[in-house]
Length: 468
Image (cartoon, rainbow, N blue to C red; front, side):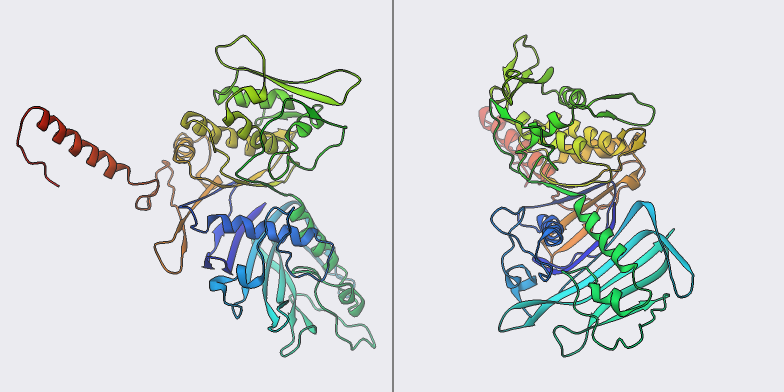
């Protein structure tokens, strides 16, 4: 689970500052305020980790990628190629990372990793990206245990030096050559292991990094339209897809799974959980996925809406159901320890359903499978006041600790833009509510009252002046 994130010189952000990442992390702001850029940055890192090109520092994406960010100049702050993109984040894991120094015999262990890196243009004519530095820090119970990193030598493009703190690296005899350039933006090359007698553990750091982004899933704001028939060959998809294209396949692949919505709560079949959440949101009464026949690999999704006795196909019900179904399936389908990044999960939903969706998200972070916590983290970009209000209420009711919710507002009224943390107290109140956060509600009410009074006075022939 991500615990902290900071991004500098990326798109609109000169500096996001330290972002506290909680089980539920929310980003609010006006259109084009930069809140989407935070998720885009994380997805670019994921794309880079999964890219087959080990020499590519960043992979900004292609036509089939979750994000397509273009050239370095297009993504860097103020489009200034002399700026360098810097970033750092911290994440924890359930199992302890432990290794032994073969030289000293000392054992190092940690439950958290911190990582930082800086990227810029190395050759201004060729526009090639160069990693300036990377650094890992191993942390145990909030106390640093050791750190190791690579830094580019001054005036060179491909020569790096390895530096460690609280861990003594010992060079192998006769090894005087450069340890090589890093792999992508995060990885120690094989030469580092060959260069030192006691650097094997860096491969475990590389692996932990790859595992982190392997658990990051993304669902975009526009989900695909539903169909009357779905084909499924029995393959288990990794996720519902960026646009929810694998939603029905995920439901079918998860039929043998059982999910509990909290400690000591009964586990129920996956499909039943999805149907239950849709019903609690007031969208349907019943939901099922049926095979067309035993000979065909095609399935239909049938829904019975409130107040009706008839079963209908998914395309015959409200558009909001088709848009929220991938959200629900992704949240409960994702493997243990997943980080789910979503844009506007509430899109096309009625305000009541938006409020209920917040309760669903609480069920997601509390959910268990096979007797263990699923440890799901949700990173949500949203415009929904109703979603936030429900979370505030649940904090006041002690249903969710306030530490489990972190919310930020992208403020573009300042130059450069700032990312401001919303201060939520024990009673669910936001102490620093930004001006016109969800529009000028009080202003609208006041102006409506003035206009109504003027209209009544005109209808009654009155001449009383209404103060502005």
